[in-house]
Image (cartoon, rainbow, N blue to C red; front, side):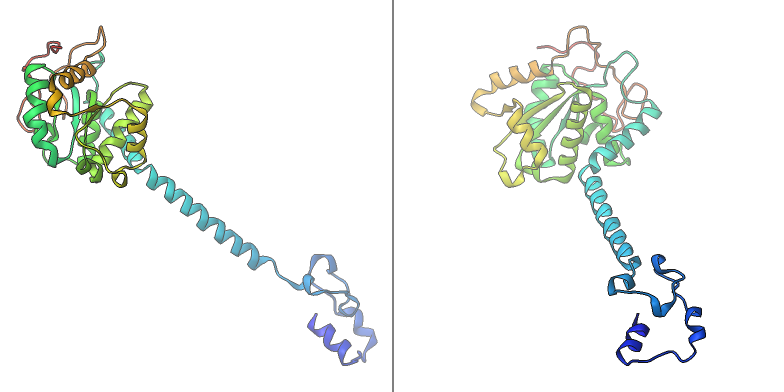
Length: 276
């Protein structure tokens, strides 16, 4: 086009008329084969769309990558949950064939709240109630990944007791336990979550899952002055359904017997039904 405009603006003529039709256009497609001096070109005809297409493709690819990354990051706990769940089921050390569990409940709690678990929860639920609880400081095998232990503890327990506090809400691993326990509840359509509120959780410490659970589910609130009512309600929440087989003594690594830490994960040391 610049050649044609140059000739027109400077009134340049081609001397050898016989060669005019020998110089033809190669592109665009609509002018292919047309003699150059007879082509009616406009600036729009000379714009290449290759760069535009490449730019748009790159922007779309980057946007898609960002979306995929955001989805993966948002569901990272669920993805890890499924990965460890598949691995665990391959090794067959989760739920037994008869539908029984190794524990009545897995206690998800922050280490800063361990004193409450040891001083209050264990004596009233394990010793007196004879419910078998799974505690990470006692029943988890040493040397294994924390994520894998969390998945196995949840899957090997009929219920999950979530001891909620601000310490719990601020901990990454505690949030992971809550996400996995909640996902199991949603996927199995089971009322397997037991929420115990030790203190009021600050709004800034509540993620989306915790906020939804606190607003849509009934929870037990710890009260020193109303302990009898609290423990009665908690034992009722842990009560297995009618006809459910008793918990079976087996380790977190498969088979039956002692736990990985060498401590029996049971309140009464047998597999009889708990006391209410």
